[in-house]
Image (cartoon, rainbow, N blue to C red; front, side):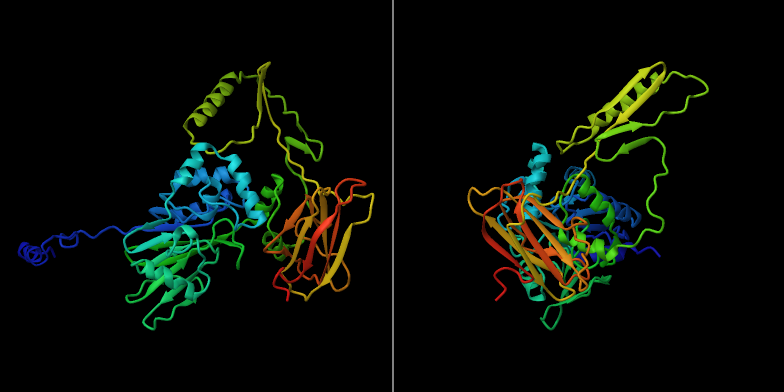
Length: 472
C-alpha cells in the first residue's frame, strides 16, 4: 500500500530531509568483485573476470600487484586498464614504475621487476605512478598491504598485526591482499582479534573485519587456486570465490619465454603430477615444428575443387588488423611476430614462425666441480638454502642441485629433470630457499666453471636446510 502524503510530510518535518527510502525507492544493490595479486598472469585474470561476469558483479576493484613474477605483464596490465573500475598500487607495481626500489625484494622478484619495466611503454609507467594506495567505498575500504601506512606495504599475517589498520580506518569492513593468503581477521566485543579461514559471511553489527582476498595469479601459499571476493553492499555479505589454477599452462608459458620458475610452482607441480595414460601424440594437420632447429614448415593445403579469388579476403583481414591496432590501448613494447601474406595464382599462404627453445646445459665437462657438498634432512623438508659469492675477477660459475630419496634414487628436481641448474653466476642467494622435491632426504650441490678450463674462485659458500643466519 502506498504511503500517505501526510506520513511523508511528517518524516520531512522530523528529519529535515527526504531519503530515497522515504519515497519508496529502494537503492539498487552493488556487487563488487575485489581482486588482488595478479602478478602478470593474464590467463588466471581472464578466468576470474569470466567468473565475476557470471556472478553478475557491477564493479571490479583491484588491490594492486598487477605486475611482478609472471610471464604476461603487458596483457595483464592492458586487461586491468580496460576492465577494472578501481585499481590500487601494489609494491611490485610501484617497483616497476620506479616509485620504490627493489632493495627488499628477493633476487627472483627483483629480476622480474627489471624485466617487466623494459616491456612497458612510457604511458604505462606514467599510469602506474598515478595509482592510489587506498579507496573508500562507503561502508568498506581497500588497500594492498595495511591501512596504518599504505605506502609501506606492511603484511597482515597474525591477528595482532590487524589492529593498526582498524585504528587507522572507521569502516567496519576492510579488504587487503599482499600476503596471497585468503582469510578473515575479526574483532568483536572481547577486543581480542582472531583469524578465520576463508568462508562466506555477513557483516554483523558491533564487529570489525579485515578480509584478505587472496591471489588471482600467484597462489604460492595453501591451495593452488585463484582466489577473489565478492561483496554485496545491500546484504552486506562477503563471498569467497575459489577457481582452478592452470599450473601446467603457467609453467609452459614461463618456460616458453625462457623464464625461471619459482620454487613453489615446481613443488605444487610435483604434488599434482599424474602419469600419462597413453603418452603424448600429435593428431593435428597443418603447421609442424621441428624441435631445436628454429624452423617451421606448413603442410600443403589440399587443392580446392573450384578456384576462387581470395584477394578480397586478404584485404579484409588486413583492414581488420589495422583497425584493431588503431583502436587498442597498448602498454607494451611487444616481441615482433612477422606474418607474411602472399597472393599468387589466387592462393593465399600465411606463415607465422615463433619458437623459443630453452636448454639446460651440464657443468663444464673438462674439470671436476670446484666445490661439492651433500646435506641430509628429514623427509617433508620444504626447502634448502644456498648462497654463493665469487671472488672479484673470478670467471662465472654454474651450480647444480641434485636431490635423492632414502634409496639413493634421484628425485625429480624443480627446474630440470637432471637437477636445478643455475649458470653464469657471480653471486646467488635465494631468501625463500630452493624447493625440495617430494620424498627427498638429501641434496648435493656442485659448483663449477661455465667455460672449459676456467674454474671459478669462491669467496663465500653456504648450503643447509636451515636459513642462513638462523642456523645456530
